[in-house]
Length: 133
Image 1 (cartoon, rainbow, N blue to C red):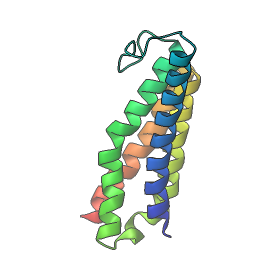
Image 2 (image 1 turned 30 degrees about the horizontal axis):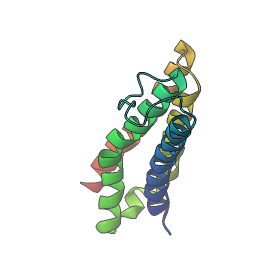
Image 3 (image 1 turned 180 degrees about the vertical axis):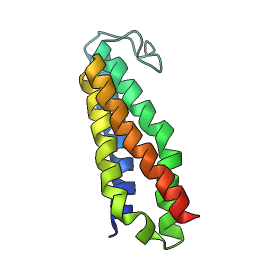
């Protein structure tokens, strides 16, 4: 399996993992009687700061999946993975780092680190657009 395919599957899997974690925690809250089943809002604004960060981390993945996942998919479909393989795992690592930092903290230092991880992804994405064109 190419690094491009690994990165695409990894991106999808990490997005799914965030969703499963969020829904498992929401299910626990409902079963424990802490929140009514119809008491959730999309951004988890009525829940703990962690749950709000979890919702944002998941939303960030969903927002990035069409762009970055799309580029990886184009490379796979066009058999141009030579253009994406070299940075594919770096991209996936930066994506996972960004999501992990998002869950951990919103301090100024951590937000800067999170942005750095996102900037790495953007730079890789721009490179891939040029390489795949």
